[in-house]
Each structure stands twice: as C-alpha cells, then as structure tokens.
Length: 351
Image 1 (cartoon, rainbow, N blue to C red):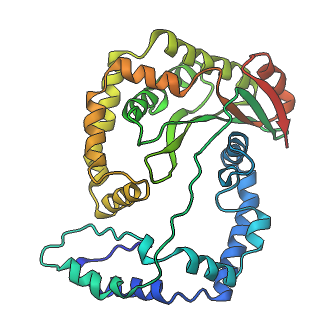
Image 2: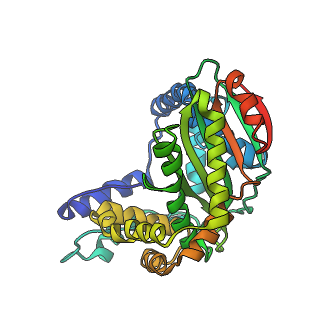
Image 3: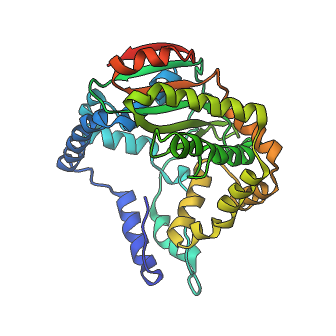
C-alpha cells in the first residue's frame, strides 16, 4: 500500500490508509470487476511475443511444482476461481501489522513521525504472523532451445536465461558490472555486433532480475538476454550471439568497457533518487529482500572498486554457453532447422 502526499496532509492521508487496512470492504462487484479485467488481459499477454517468451522461460526453468513456474498473475482457471470471499480469506490470513514495515520518505522537519504513526497506523492490530516456509529456488539450466511457434511471424522474439546469484551474494556487484558491459546499453558487446555491425535487431539487452529471498540471506536472480531479430536472420543472429559469449570467455572485457560501465552505473546514480517516491521504493525493496539499510551505498562503492578481471569472471559465469535455456517465439517452419544446425542444445517446438 503506498501513497504520495504533501507533508502537511500526511496525518490525514495515513488515517485513510489505516482505515483501509483495518476495515477493507472487498466489495463483491469490485472483486468481480478486477477478475474480469485480468481475464481480459490474459489472451493479450499470450499474443505478445515478449510476454509469451517470459511465460515459457519460467515454465522451462522451474519445476512444475514450484509456484514460480506459473504466471505470476494467474491463469484463466485460477483467476476465474477468485471471489470476494477468497480475497477476504487471503487478507485475513496474510496481511497484518506484525508482517508489515512502514517506509516514510520526505522533509519531515517539524513532524513528530512517531506520534503520527501511533495515531494512524497504530490502530491497526492483528495476531502475530507465523513465518512462511520459503523453499530454495532451483532451476534446470540444461542447455536447450524451445521454439514457440507463431506461423507467419516476421520477427523472432528471443529470451535466453538461467538463474544465478542475487544481491546477498558477494559476486553481485561484479555480476552487475559484467552484465552491463555485455548488454546493458547501446554501446554494449551485444549491440555492437548484433545491431551496429550486423543489423539483425534494434537492440539486445542482458540483465539480472532479482527473484526473491528466503529471509536468511539466500535467493536467486534471473539472468537473461532478450531482444528480437528478423525471421530470416534468426539462425545467424543466435550464432553471432554465442560467438560474443565465447569471445568474452576467451578474451575478457576491456578496461575501457569497465570504465564506461562504472561511469554509467555509479556516476548517474544520484539522478535515481531525486524524488521521495524513488527513495521509498528502493528502501521498500530492501526491506522485502532482507537487505541492510545502507545496501545501496555499499553497492555503489563496490561497483566503483570492481576491476575488469573480476567483472569478466562474473559475466562469464553468469552466461556459460552450454548452460542456457533459449526460448524463441517465431515461425518454426523458417527458424527450426537453422537453429538446430547451431548445436546449442536440443530443440523442441511448442504452440
């Protein structure tokens, strides 16, 4: 639950938030409206190549028994089963002050925040929260290719991924730096070859996306490369992408690449925290991921200290050429055989 409000209205605004938390309505018609909206979104997502690729990658990587293998916002069958009674039951079981953290950011000069919180959110009571078991995240990153067939598609959407360390791991800063050099900007290795030199694409990106933490300093991140290429060049583009990864493993990053990445990641960092909302979002994320309050400051200091060799080792470890799951959303009749010829893993076609 979040709000953005002039500091002069903070007490009244938090009073409304407290009222909503203490006595939420969960009107049956409103719940049905949101269920219907979600049901309308699902077929549109299936028709969107990037969303379809992400859905397939998660299905491929994670065990079928793991919640993470299924769409985060539900399937048609699971969403249809939701009603006001189910929402109320979930709220009563899981949403309570014992499991909540209030993050307040702004110019609080002259504001007795403790008093304001006590008079508003302090009225929200509930039973203690029982810890929820968080099983470790596991994934099958056996090198393979899955083609989601889209007959007649003029482009192929590609998403290549596996899981790796998250922000609790000492390698995170080096991984962030190395992945940025690989595909974090228009000047990255991937764009230099696939976009500028070969003209296969408007852009390819490499990134690390945090998944979740178990609260005890263990977690995982999704490491991925994404982009789209024209259908006839799907095979050549993948071939060149793998060559970029092999060249990186053999020759490493350059000091110039490392310096540009540090400048872009650290030099412009203050611009990310110009508003109270962005600071609050960052701190809330740290709470959710069980990170220390000074995590951001320590991360930027670590990025500035990370050397080229360390960044190279981290990105090579993040994207081993024989342990990548590749999802292609495109015209299987045109791309299957060229992709098989690359030898980057067993190829299967799904609809």
